[in-house]
Length: 314
Image (cartoon, rainbow, N blue to C red; front, side, top):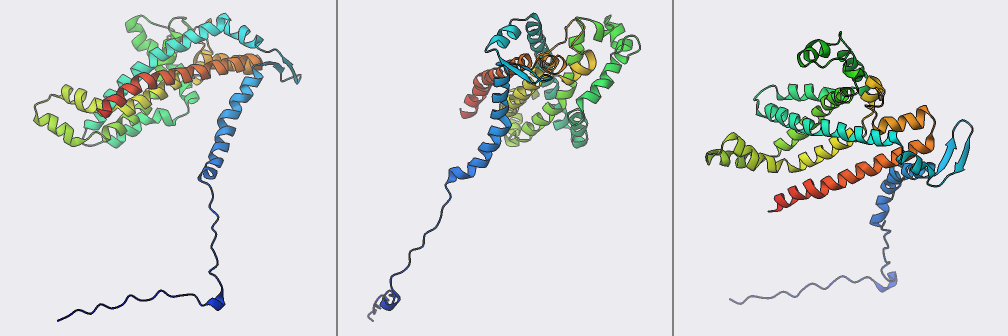
């Protein structure tokens, strides 16, 4: 039996009387054009304000008289060499050292506790996140009442036990009192970030470590802690930024006192630019604070962030 091969069908041809096939041209929008609105918004919301502050730092601007005299770098020399700027810089650094490590350690313990419970985790997550959702100025009023001398709850309890009283009027205790409020505020945010990181820890690795006989500390240090790397780096950067720009609780609780012992860079910025109408000096403090935040963020990414990135690629 022989097989018959059928001829391939001829392609359809356009009749010559209809003319050539018209070419279809499509207008394609360049991909970079889709990024233009985002770049414009970024420029208007981030770059433009920084440029305005930089220009104001070069002028002696009086908003009441409407005069602006170009003084070049005189504002920088006047503010950066002043004693109040050095004191505010030191206070900001001390506040950061008092709040950031305590916030990360306390938030890690709370997150591990919430993650380990079988019920009520959502309730406790919401409870610890309440300070983040509340208005810090209003909460600072309540904390100021707690720190009142003699009649305040803290003076009546912890203060009498430790012999530390009248915190807000003490040059050595005013800044730690503000740091207590800052830590209380940031712990809730850090707890949520760490819980998100704990949810991403592979459970089979934890179970494998448990079957191999690893204890609770070994499982945390060798399995959980490396997996929390991105969450820890992100939380470290955000809490450091919040510590550097602290203002609300300083303004409400101490107003920078006593004797400027709790004046931070953000409060000095407000004091110069708003209270004393020194727009040029306030702009210099703003730029100094911006440079400090960017520098610390870059250092944290280059050290802690790079270390966890190398650990994750091994």
